[in-house]
Image (cartoon, rainbow, N blue to C red):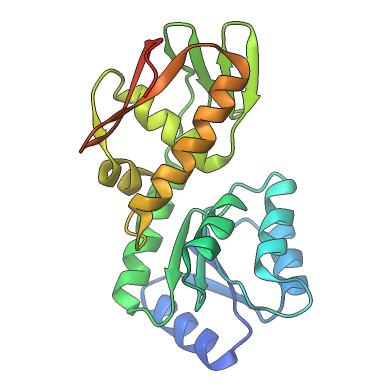
Amino acid sequence: MRALLVEDEEKVASFIKEGLEEEGYTVDCAYDGRVGLELSSKNKYDIILLDLMIPYIDGIELLKRIRQQGIDTPVLILTAKSSKEDVIKGLDSGSDDYLTKPFSFDELLARMRALIRRGHRSETRTLKYRDLSIDPYSRRLTIGSKESELTDKEFMIMEFLLKNREKPMTRKEIAEYVWQNISDSTNIVDVYINFLRKKIESISPKRYIHTVRGIGYILREDNDKD
């Protein structure tokens, strides 16, 4: 496995690099965003570990540029920023998971393994329910003849709800599917469900995502408001 570590604190980078190499990873290090962008653009990695507070190009901007280039390598953010706003900003910029400092090395390894497994999994077929469908390639939601583009996290929530359509899913189950073990991720689920509802409402009069009181959410087609 090949990893790119973008971290400006050389002692931290050295510690992580040595630990990962002992686990069999090949690790390239970048100590600023410009080098991180160059390496991620020309090399193929199984995972990118990204600090947010890095010089020249900060982590969020670097992440956006990586995704704009069509690079879909799993990205795990490593940072001391832990507020819900920071978590949402990082995730919505294209990261796949978020680990706050300080963290245990065992947890880092576990998160990396989960993301690499998910990154290697290929979902090739369009998921459909009634007149609603999502395309795994374009990340587009289609209802009837109208479309709306989804972010990565919005797509994954819709994917999970579609796979479990007409069955109530808890916030924890949704969070574990999309974000694994991120702290306070169940609250982030509510934020993203609201985003999805607005996108659905923009292209269809029907309501598909419904609140199940005391549990979470369910995907079903009807016109009930909740």
